[in-house]
Structures are given as C-alpha cells and as structure tokens.
Length: 77
Image 1 (cartoon, one colour):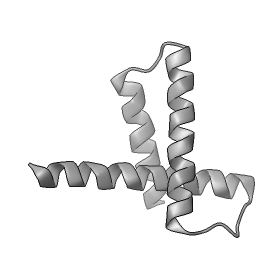
Image 2 (cartoon, rainbow, N blue to C red):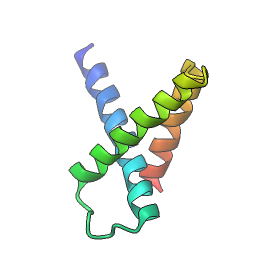
Image 3 (cartoon, one colour):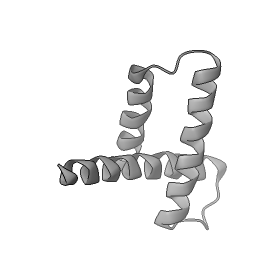
Image 4 (cartoon, one colour):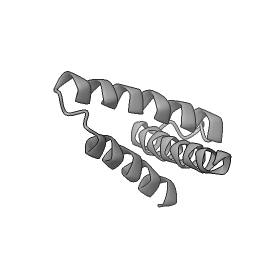
C-alpha cells in the first residue's frame, strides 16, 4: 500500500513539472530549466487554478482530474 502512495506522488510531481514547463516556455524564461524550479512553478500554478475553480464553484473531482491529466500530458510531450 505504501508503494501506491509513492506512485501517486510521482504522478503528481510529473504533472506539476508539466505545468511548470508549459508556463516557463510560455513566458520565455529559458534560463530556468532545472526540475525543481519547474515543479515549484507548476505547484504554484495548480494552486492558483484550484483557487479559481473553487471561486467559481467548479472544483469538482472531474475538473481536478483534468488538471492532473493535462499536466501529465504536458510532461510527456
């Protein structure tokens, strides 16, 4: 059971990295390319998007799953 939580954490980390990669490329900050920085940017962006979804009362599990899956897609692209 502990391996399942480790796998879930790794998927979340990859999704955060994917969102961070997209945002850094979009803002053209090319000198910031390390894994930790991109992951932290992605975490911040997911917190921001989660707050916006909560504000407009759309923070349902399906919407949050879409954020996770799209972050994983950005990671693997």
